[in-house]
Length: 266
Image 1 (tube, one colour):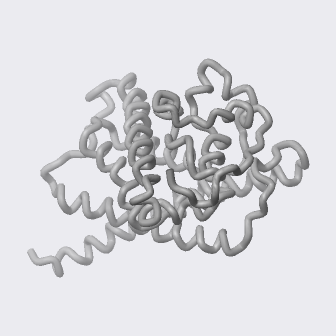
Image 2: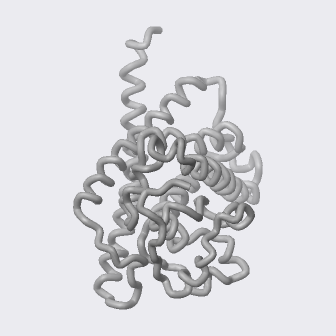
Image 3: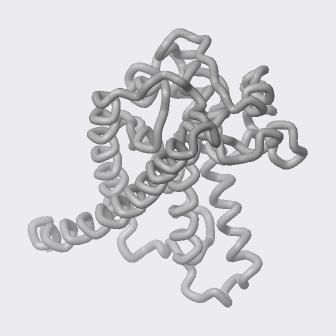
C-alpha cells in the first residue's frame, strides 16, 4: 500500500497522540497554576523562589513553544510506531508476565533511565557550541513557572524525546506502568519549574532528600544557567560536582539569587 493509503490512519493516530500529550501537560500545568493562586491568597505561606516578576510576553512565548513541543513529541511517537511496525512489541501483555514487584520496579527503572539520559544530554546542550541552537530558548525564562516546562526549542524537543525512545525499546514494561511513568515524568517536570518549593526546607540536608531534585535546585539552574542538570535526582550532579555549593542554604531559606549572566552557557 502507498503512503496515501496509510495517510488517513496516520493522521488519526497523530491526532490521538496529540490529544494524550496535550491533556497530560495541560492537567499538570493547570494544577501548578492553581497551586500558585492558592499560595498567593495565603500571603507568606510559600513565597516565590525569585521575586522577579513574570511578564505576559514570557507566558506568550512559553505557550507557543509548549505547543510546538507537544506536536513534536506526538510526531516522534508516530514515527517510532511507523518504523517499528508490527515487528516490535513495546509492552508485555499481562501483569503476570513479570509480576507485581517488577511492575513497580519498572517505573523506577524508567525514571532512572530518563534521569541519566536527561542529565548528560542536558549538560551537553549547555556546551557553548550547542547552547544557542538547542537550549537557549528554554533559558530565556530565567524565572520559571509551570508553563516554562515545555518551552523548548524544537531541536531540543527532538533530543528530549530520545529518553522515551530508549525506554520504549529497551525497558520491559506493561503499558499501564509506562502510562504511570509518563504522568509522573510530566508532573515532576512541572514541579521543577513551579517557582515555589513544596518540599521541607531541611530536604537538602536529609539523608534521602539530598539525592532528590527539587524546585529550588532547578530554579537555581534557570537563574544562573548552570548547575543541576538532572530530572528526578541529584545523583549525577553530586557525583560529577555540578551541584551548586550554596544549594542547601538556598533550600533552607526557599529563595534563589541569580548570580550568573542571563543565558550564559557553561
